[in-house]
Length: 623
Image (cartoon, rainbow, N blue to C red):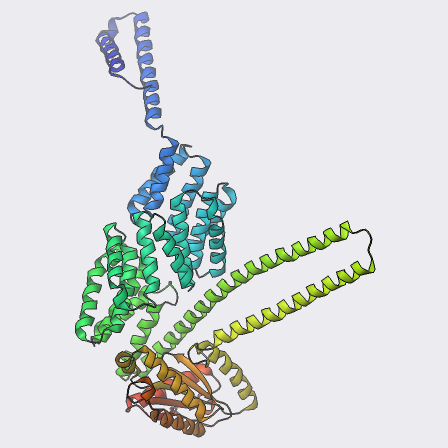
């Protein structure tokens, strides 16, 4: 029922009539007074009923309208957070009025969990999502809850559950008719696989997003995901137009967070290929143009990457005060995010700066932090790989278990149908058991070999096959423990290829890789007693068991001379190679790997500072 003009006019006339009587109410008898009071009460009740009916009509919202509001709210969760929050308030009001169906309530709970995660309340968001999955019956909301849970878990570096939850959504996507939800599955899959370094899978799901009639939001998402992967392995000139078009596509619909992630990665690769100041200044100009929207987004990880990029550009332009300022800003902004690439870049700039300023105390302070961050990042990358492999192995094990159960069922069926258990059947049963036994033993041996192979790969540098930083740390730890017990001396050195960046810039990375592999072979020829490890880039370590400081110095001198005599004609270019060595031993540094690393690095710094292509032994202050 609605309030019409006729009703309003009728009640207005009634009020006027009563009001004209009220003026002489003191002269009325008791009966007239009672009639007037009854009339007023009737009018009050009438208006109350009409008002209630009108309010009911105005708030009668169709269920389809509410579902549309839920979908709209989900679609703007990244691009328009203000409207997203306003819609949450509207939906909360409808929920309090019991307007939401069971499906819609689960959908609304999911959006609330997203808001908790956006604010950084990961634990509360995860709990809410687990309840949604357990309590809600429809497939769509179960998949939504698993998707967001996987996203939050991979951000929290809880990789194995993240991949398991993602596997659930991918396995159940066939039960979903909603194309937007399918696109959301592809989006989260691409993100999660990229964050666990499974780039081929990430690229596949990005292509699925692009090719499945995406909305403008998911088209931007898919294109950004695609080119963030391709930038890792493709030449700049081949991607320039596609990257610029993607950035424009995203910015036209207001998605500056995704566009600027891609822009910063593009500028980083562009800076690495830039040799002249003019190109570096061009990178700086582009960075300044992007800064307004980056700061406005208030997305801390993006701001930290931007500050790190500023530090790199200013360092390349020899503007050291600004480089240091931005490096420190990036470090401050990286707090709580974990060991990130931008954090390591900023620490390296600080180490190089204080070395240049002849301030070894500060250089060593930041070097220790840099080494710790690199180790954390390496451990994180290993955790990603192991989580992915574990999930896949578990899935294989489940499949294998099902096959074994099927085999057992076949055997039981045979036993039931065969009444006459002859000697032939007994022999057949024994043969089958032997086959199963051989199969399990073979599988166990193969599994052990695979695990051993994974461990070996995790501890070796893929290019040179010598120990990587993690493998060297573990090996040195066991060697030092034995040496300390037997009181034998161990020699240790760090060497760095001189002006290696110039070789990469002038002759290309393929030539640079040839130099690294050839240098390692040269050092291995000098003596098979040495254990070599790659600390990163063009920096290497040498460990010499049962070797004094003097003997270690002599060995490094032989390596240095051998390196300086290398011929580069094989590469098609003619250039010289040299290296600088810093030497120490347990007699000076003690049986402590960190001390040996710091002392050898300080000696290496002195070798570099005094002209390069030389070997310097560490001299303790007490020597």
